[in-house]
Length: 608
Image 1 (tube, one colour):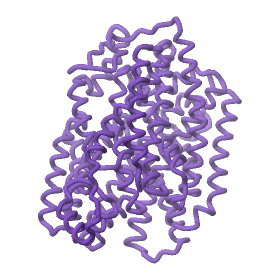
Image 2 (cartoon, rainbow, N blue to C red):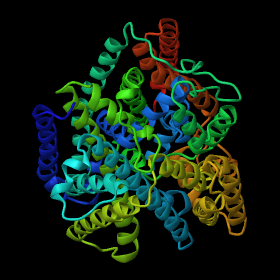
Image 3 (tube, rainbow, N blue to C red):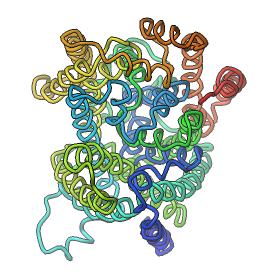
Image 4 (tube, rainbow, N blue to C red):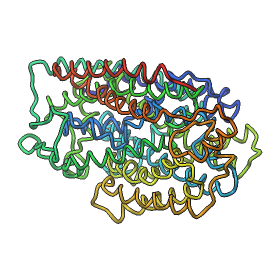
């Protein structure tokens, strides 16, 4: 099945509306820096939550997750803990409000609230900017490649090649498609700023939700009375030391993919994900679109609501699409075109192949438009974060502190275009979606975690420790891929983390503590729990009525049951589409109990 005129019309109307939104909102975006980058901090939490969820519902990640679901079955729900996805629960319960209390524009600017503004802070400030830009470039290249592979299925290169005046090697065809739609997405995100991004995300979310539910219904209808062949254990989300899935008698290339991924010792892999994930979540959000949305909320209370809302509106809808397309692919595997230009099977093509083979006209147009919009929302959110760091934390801070509003807006435009061009260039060096994903979550973020964890919970940690922890971690993250070429980056993470921790501690004790006035101001405004006793004593001496944060136990309890609830939200649509009645009813019961508990222990106790 090919795109019909109905499908194409839906796509064109959507693209036209995005351009219109960007053009209409350009005047509001030009009012000042805060209006452009943060929507003047006036947008309601539920709109920012929908926008944040839309940014996470990216096309590349969804292609990757459909491939995971196809091969690993119900066990695939754990693999996104590589990010880790449960960091949203830590944010929801306490870290979002801690972060929002700073009133900063970016994560780098936030450092001034923790370490002060003297010259020693500049090095730590620069290290955050470098990390943020590396992460942004990585995510943009990741989205760029995923979009190209998606478009290649819908618009075969053979139908385009006659109109192109130059030859393109098969392995670079996805990159050409990526360039075209990346440049299109650049317009509305650069011109319209944060408001344009949020409204565009809302429209995309409505379209995509409609399409995902339709795909789930189609899968249920097709599945009725037509069981599919999968290995023993595919339907079971639980696991032992080994993965225990053998595809050799069904699809031999699936076993090759498992070996290539390096997930076979699944028990060890899971423990490494959990170990890394807890520390990564304690560190708070990375300096990307997620952090920008938190900082853009109207208050700390709304920041908590916003991050809690993300999992609710993202996971059930996304996994309805994932399991729906997986079911359709398993029922009709021989009809899919999954060949790779370099030979073998490219399981990341399951998503676009299943859509074009099994989804009817109209619904295909909605789904195609929604996934194209998913790329555009992830792209625009990441681009907005990159612009914020370059303009706010480099240009205004070091180059032109007295820049006029017009100069700031023009620099935002120029930076946006430059970032896009560089990400396209980097995209040509990316082998596949999984390779860049593994580097981002397994290597680069490993260098970020230690320094950003200590900053919240340890009063003695200073700007010098932050810089050396970040420098050691990021340097190791850049070097490790060439040293450990054939090893999953996650498995190198403890060594990477250890190097970063050593840098943090050595740097901290080689310099004086942060100025006590800065620490007291931070402690009073952010109100963190952790190792803050010396600061707490001084604050209470000056203000005996000050009550320290004693919510550690409650916050950790909420985190624990929140993670269970998030898992339930993930697997519930999978049980529903597969109509596994007993597990479905148990999941609903667990989720209901947790919601009742969190109403009392979290929602009713939210504070600014």
